[in-house]
Image (cartoon, rainbow, N blue to C red; front, side, top):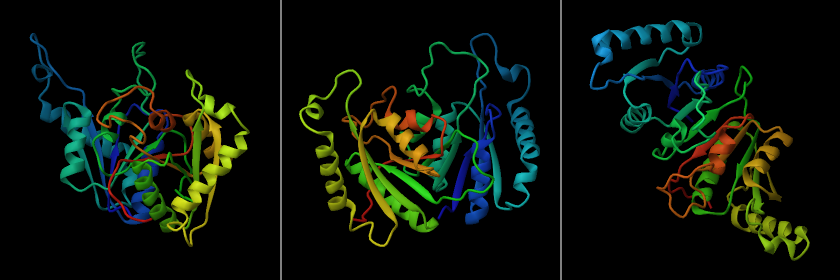
Length: 296
C-alpha cells in the first residue's frame, strides 16, 4: 500500500516510536524508506557556522551518525536512503515529499531540551502542523510506544460529515481493506467549551445520537459494504472524545481529515482537533489532507 515512506528522523525523540513504526511498515510493504533530518544551521551579521566547520562536513557527519544509530533496523530494508539537509525543516521536507512521490510521512512527538514558555502544545508553528498543511500524502504521527510489529486490526475514523472527512473516510476504507481491519466511524457532537450549544439541551441527547447514526448509515453504508464496521456517536469536546473512543475500543490507528470544518483552510489556527489528537499519547494518528476520492 505504501511504496515510498519518509521518516523524519531526529535525536530529540523521547522514545523511538516513529522510527520503529516506519521500519516495520517499510518491511511489511517492501517500501522504499527515506530517513530525513534537517540541521538547524544559520548565521547572523557577525558570524556563521561555516566559519567553524564546513556545512558539507557537518552534514556528512550527521548522516554517518544516523546510519550507525539505525544500522540494525536498516539491515533488512535494502531500499533506503538518508537525507541530511540544512535550513528550515519543513521547507526542505516538503520539497522531497512533492518531487519524489512520497505516499506516507511518519513523524514523532519531538522532545526539545529547552523549555519554551511561548510554545503551546500543538501551536501553529510546529513542524507537524506545517507539513500536514501542505502535503497531499497522509502523515502518520506516532507519540506512544507501539508494538514491535505494526498490526492494524481496529481503526477509528473521526468524521464531521465535511468533504475532507468524506475523502479521509475513503482512504480509511482502503487501509481497513488492506489490513482486514474493523472500521469504527465516529462522530462527536461538539457541545462547545466556551460557548455551549443550546440546541443539545432542548431535548433528550439520544434523539440527536440516533439521528446522527441514521445519517452515517445513509451517507457511508454503501461504501462500507463487505467491510467490518460500526457507527458510534456521542457528545463532548471533539479531541477528548476521539481519544476516549480510541482508548476504549483499543484502536490501533486513528484517522482524521486535516482542515475538516475550517472555513479558511489556508489559515493556521491554534489547538486544532487534529493536532491535539495527534500529539496526545495514544495509538498512531493518520492525518489525511483533502484529495478528491470517490468511494461512495
